[in-house]
Each structure stands twice: as structure tokens, then as C-alpha cells.
Length: 264
Image 1 (spheres, one colour):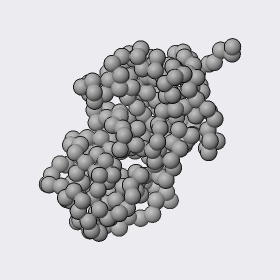
Image 2 (tube, one colour):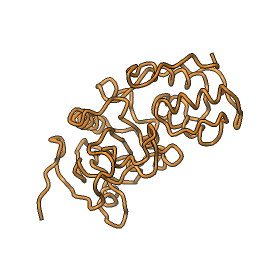
Image 3 (cartoon, one colour):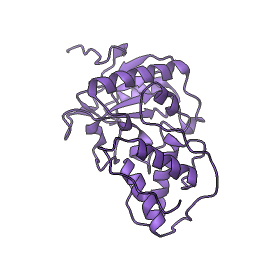
Image 4 (tube, helix red, strand yellow):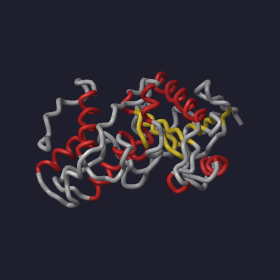
């Protein structure tokens, strides 16, 4: 059997997972998706990610002490994202490289990510993004692409720290203030405008004009990543101001100009 060498010099070893295949659409990955393992131990996560009966894998696993294992070659399609959507793409496994970060997650009490682990994640993400020319706004949370199913890597993950290191797209969240702008199932042009902004940024939101469950799930995912001070799925002024700032910061060649929304 051929002994595999890591694609990244930061990975200490290659622990091959059988759970992978060919990329179906994209010849090369164009986004990076971060996860937490959501299991009690890293050993349990590694066992699941390399078990042929589990049907899951990732390209990399980052341990609490900063150690990095590679499980799937970067040119292959690992099975980490599942069903989801971003910018109209549905096969995120084919479009992405996935990093699993050892942490028990919400079910384990959402403990903080240790400093060595975050430092290793930053360096690994920097290496991957540089080699594959992945744009900052394409560094995503699992919850971003699957807001109805996933919460990882969660609101305690320090996205702001990654941004200060040059990883990902970020803006300082607008201060928390005021009540929710929409009632559940409220219908009207302001709701449609909020949905359009979420979809413009990348979230798989159907623009119905109704503040429905799917929209609230997308708002909660946005809050986990970009406005973690309060994650409740309610579109308040802070959430929408932060979203508008992120869209405004994107390259004007990538997205069309955004008109001032009707809630201001």
C-alpha cells in the first residue's frame, strides 16, 4: 500500500480515511469549511472519521494541543459537509476542503477552544487558502452552509481572532440594541429585503417575504458566525447592520451594490 504524505507541511501525520471520492463538479476546491467534532474525545472523532461504516470524513483533524492529522488528500472529495447550500451551490463536499476541530460542541457544554488549537487552525487555514487561492468570504462555518441541521463550530469559536490573522471575512458586530424587527411568520417587503441580503451574502434562503423557520435558522447561523453576542434567530437591528456591513465590504466586482434597506 502506498504511504501517503500530507499535503500541508503543518500536518504531523496522515491517518487515511476510506470515506472519500472524486470531486464531482469542481476540479479544485473554492471554499474552506470549519467544523467541531461534537464528540466527547478526539480519539472517538478520529475513529468515526476513519470508519468505513460511518460515511463521514474530513481532510484535516486539529487536536486540542495543536497537532494536525490529514485524513483525505486535498484533491479528493471528503464527506464532511453533507446536504447544504452556499451561493447557490449544493455539493459543498465537491467545492470545499473540510477541517474538523476537536471539541465536544454544544452538547458537551461548548467549552472554549484551546489557544494551541486555534493557532494551529489559523496556520492550517492560511496554508490551505494560500495554496488554493480561497477567498476570505469563502471561509465558512458548517452552520453557514447547513443552518437547518448544524451549529458548528459554534458561537464560542473565535472567528474574530482568525480574521485578525488574515483568515476569513469579518466586520466588528454592530452593538446589541433594540427588539426583533419581525414577528414570526410576519410578511412584507422588509422581510423580503432581509432575506435578499442573506441570500446575496451566500445563505441558502428562499426569498418568500415571510419570516419563516428557514429564515430564522439562517439568521441564527449568521449570528453564530458574525454576531455571536446573542444567537436567537431574531433579525434585530444589530444583526442586519452587521450583515449589511459585510456585504458592503465585499469586492464590488463580486456582488452588486446593495440599496439601503427599508428598516432604516
